Image (tube, rainbow, N blue to C red):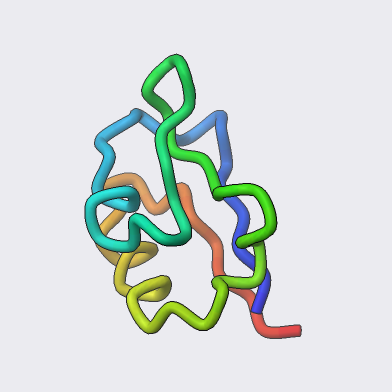
Length: 64
């Protein structure tokens, strides 16, 4: 699995960090970010749910 966040689309709602705090955080400007080393989802079952919870669909989860 590979997780990316489109920083041009993200509005900083924070749903990703609330849903899967072991994978996502918010940067200094309040926008969503993937935690370093967690780009593969770290086996967190809530990763896909966090992507679905994004109100602007800024998160992409792809299978590798």
